[in-house]
Each structure stands twice: as structure tokens, then as C-alpha cells.
Image (cartoon, rainbow, N blue to C red; front, side):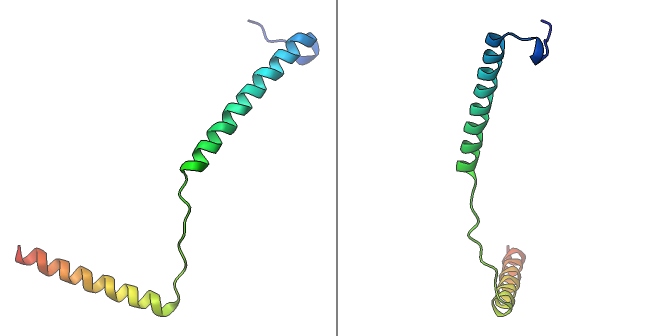
Length: 73
């Protein structure tokens, strides 16, 4: 099939091409909507310095306890 430039196409061919492109755009918009529906929104809130230090200490203690448990087993 040879591709004509849009200046060489008939009205019916142009309308058909526009409908085809509209269908493609509609399909892509539908896919975007589906992907946006699957996206997980982040509810994270940045911590202040004190909370961050406390969380770091807790993580260190948990890690130390896990290591002790692994040594006993």
C-alpha cells in the first residue's frame, strides 16, 4: 500500500484517517486512565530531626536483636 500525502487524499480518506487516529488516541487515553488507577499514591510525610533520630535508633536496636536471634539459632 502506498502512502499518500494528506494533500493527495480525498475527503473520505482524510475522514477515515482522522477516525483511525481518534480511535488510537481514545485507546491510549483509556490505557493512561487504567495506569493512573493502578498507581499507588504516596502518603509519606517527611520526619523532623528528632523523629528521624528515634527511628534510626529503633532500627539499629531491631537489627541488633535480629543478629542475636540468628546467633542463637
